[in-house]
Length: 466
Image 1 (tube, one colour):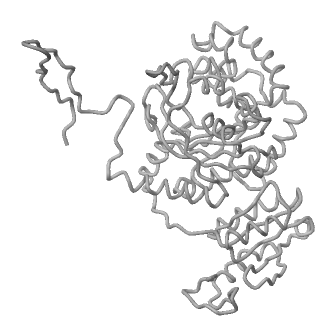
Image 2 (image 1 turned 45 degrees about the vertical axis):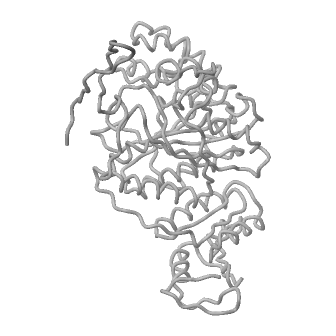
Image 3 (image 1 turned 60 degrees about the vertical axis):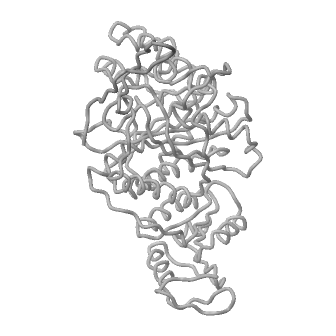
């Protein structure tokens, strides 16, 4: 393989007897960009399959937004004073005089599409999945490029913390499906505008008293974006941030309750998380929950595969209705690098054959763990968390064509039981939670099943439905 720079001799002629020298033709990618060669494509195909499958199973619809947007969309949503806006955004003026930019992230463009296409009238919550390239003029390093690939999951229209937990559960599911299991979630709450105002006054006062110990960028950030000081990677700034006031100690009642509920859900799921008081994510649109997905390896501490959080004020700030929302993004380049390092196995596609319905707060808590337990045992499960009567949830189950629906209500949550409904025959039975996995597997492996048209089918030990 030839590397290095190949040059073409300048010999273009313009007019009579005149030569205009040409710039050398560099046969290599621009710094920070790269080619994805055929030998790497199996990893990317694996990635795309897992993301698409996970999006489908968790009820997300695919949306693709343009790479190019009006620059002020990012200025307003991400925030002046952030590194992305000040240093990293590829922006320019078109021949028609429009100020545009290559997207540095997905959320702002998806929020714009949500407003532009009137998605506010759709049943909530609205779940959107996207995947593609983004651009930041940042220093290239391991797994980080100026043109990079990202997968994005966003939920609009619901502020219930069960969706925060469910989104983190989804992130864990994606990483585990790709073979990357040694992860932990870094978690924090940065509150809402109501309680953050008082906190920022305390933080600015603290940082001003130690201003001489900060790097030049962080001295500037005290005025423009003080939260970003907590996230600086400079050693001297890290030492200052270690003793700074913590956001979780200054939350209002609503934010404190929200964060407490989220932690209870994550404890119920037994997902590995660490409360990181320095985690702020740095973009202006974040409120309350923020999280990152870290590799749980001391030798590579701080190696992040992605992250996200709540942005309950974003839609309203750019001209839409007051709409709570939460989402996260995955850095696919870094994930593929890790997949290659651990020799990740290929993934075989399948579809969910079981639906999990739940009613009541206690049932919601228990259903998250049931969902995880079934998935862990190889049973693909669909669900409709957040909202919906039992009747509407059963309609969703019927539309998906699942063969079994599991129903958890308040009584079942207290009794430690689950109702198992056969969607083909209409029969149902109640079983103890500890026997559920075995019963579901037995039903799914039944060789003879009565179909909706009254006929019988025998095919590879799998339930078949017409």
